[in-house]
Image (cartoon, rainbow, N blue to C red):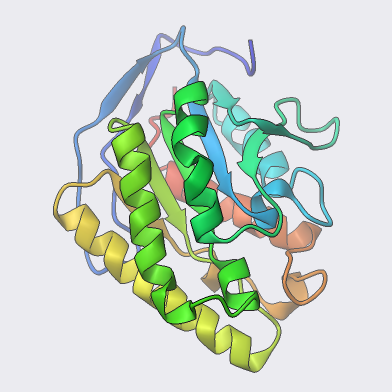
Length: 235
């Protein structure tokens, strides 16, 4: 059993759309205490933890544990320090949105997460890969996730800044487009929430101008945790 069990049950509450122009809600999902909530951290090297093995997952695990939740990180990849007892994730270093989409249905089938934490798009920007179409690819990825796992909730994080002015302009444009698309999906009833990770980070939080350093991952974990307080009832 991963984590510690508290109380009788906890509830995946109505998702609140944060940073997308107003508040929207969806139906809650009740999870018995005997079944830990399964969270898939999904993305690229930021999820994997390039420079910092385990990345934001180290502190997010502890935040959720401290608040009494029973959590099971899921995925076909594993890494992280001893401080992270649950090392499973679905982060693939160097991958773009389209590459992630190719495998996501099978990963979802294998792990059946209740909740997906998605951060993807940095490599599309860095590789200058059809950047204008990147938000469309993100939309297609979300479609693929919902087709494979209709009951899954998705938290879509904005990608972190890049410490290069031209690339960072593209990051900001991408994040803005993603936020708007997530809001539209949310308004039509999709179980999805936009979480603004970018706003919490500065170039000082980057190890190499692209990947978060330890403090950057701490900030990402805290931002995820803040969003999750709107979703998970404290046991």
